[in-house]
Length: 71
Image 1 (tube, rainbow, N blue to C red):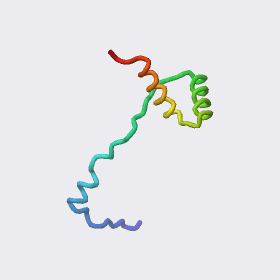
Image 2: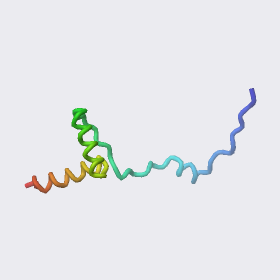
Image 3: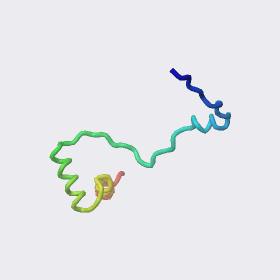
Image 4: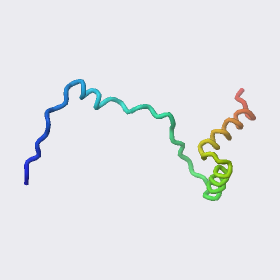
């Protein structure tokens, strides 16, 4: 078996860059269970309206907040 040769170790500046935090996401996952029939209906409706399910959910949320303002 041939010996694997590694290159020189990274410089301190490169080490810090390598372990820096991951970039902040602009979105966050929502995780909830929904009836498969409702999911299919929502997906079809979003497609018919030429929008993503995410965009449809955001629009629904905006309209909900308008109808039900916080005190």
